[in-house]
Length: 88
Ligand SMILES: [Zn+2]
Image (cartoon, rainbow, N blue to C red; front, side):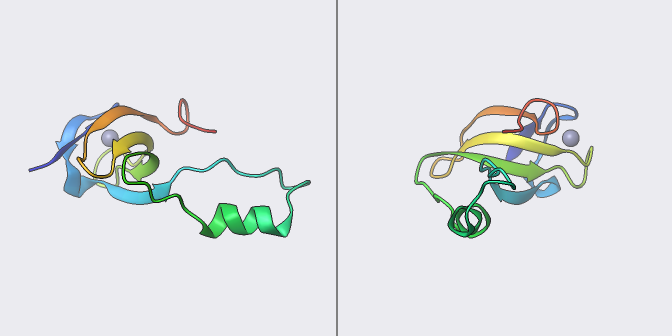
């Protein structure tokens, strides 16, 4: 069983979480070009290494979590609530 750390619930089974996607800084709506919006909406880095991701603890507290996770090893070095400490 793979355990993921939730800052609100503690270590929980990874099946309780849903992967939302890579975190990316949202462009300024008043100044962004169509190319910048396309990049924000559709283009991802998909690294083989450390990635900043957004996860939802759907079977627990129901909060969005900002997670720094290694995509090859599955190691996790930081998890925080996306609403309070993980927003860009
Ligand atoms: Zn939780």
